[in-house]
Amino acid sequence: MGTTLAAELLAACLAHTHGKRVLLIGRQTSRQRLPRHLDLALPMATRPQTWKLVQRGATDIRALLVAAGALDALTATSVSLQMDTEAGAAFGSHLAHAAAGFGLRVRRQGERWQLSRVPALRGANLETRLHAWLSAIGVERADRDTVQVTFGDRGVELARASGPIEGAQIVLADDDALLEMPEEDRRVGLHARSMTVTLTARIQPLPAPVSLFPDRGVSILQQPQRQALVAITGDDAIEARAASTLGGPFPVRRLATSRYHALSSGDGAPMIGPLAAGGAFAIGGMGDAAAFAMPSLARVLVGAADDAEAAWFAAHAPGADRAHVAELAL
Image 1 (cartoon, rainbow, N blue to C red):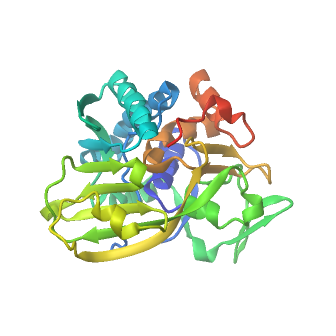
Image 2: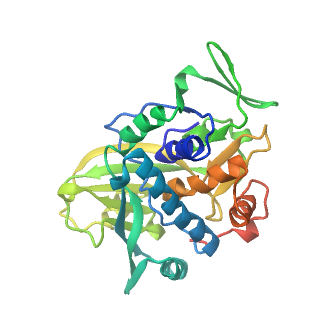
Image 3: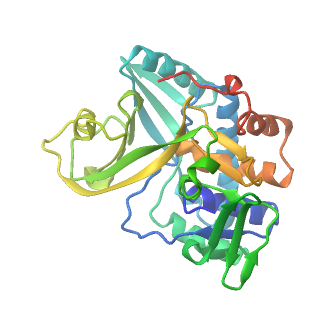
């Protein structure tokens, strides 16, 4: 269950790489809807195990896109990482050193880190091409609004008008799927946070195609024609925080804005694994790197993971000791 690019890639891995029958339950999204993820192989993580998993995912996704005829959608981009606080500076330094250790080009400019050669998934037609390829390799689809989902004592149950949907494994593959659960059933250490994403008119050039301001809760993707896609976490001082990351001209004109909710953990590490209620597999808190974790997750689901992958997912499962995965606090 899921509507994101990560959900589509998970379906592709399970069907194409592992030969599984897959039913992808999601909603059709409008082409006018603003993107909600940057889809970067840049985890907000300092632990090398997470970096290794995401970097391996980038290699696996490259092979997948070759099969789908969409290799051009995997590009390398530059990311500017700006920290403002003492805790943020410590986090940024550790993250930058991890990035350098895994092959990214890293340069420090004052309180800003410049990371180059970051794998990213781009292209307005990527999801359209993936959709067609998934159909060609046998992935079935169902519109979320045509599927009855019941969260109860027996776990998650699915049904269509024609009858129950039977499956070996139910995967709640993105935040929207998890947020549809009753709150008491998804109390696995994930918290919903308000998000605002806005597309601006032409602005001054930014230091890199992607600019991240974790201390301010702002992420920016510079668009063609120097427009900017700006994502802001939380409800307080949205305008001021967004404006503080842009160079003008002011006032910055908004072309479109949307609001939604995303899930995050209190310790900065994702929560991925089977829920106690019925064994549905939940994916939450992975952020913009979620798509690049999908090849490893597919191997876990089919029992083909190596020891390192199995250990990583076991450590991030609901109920595991978070002391072994918690990130530096921001």
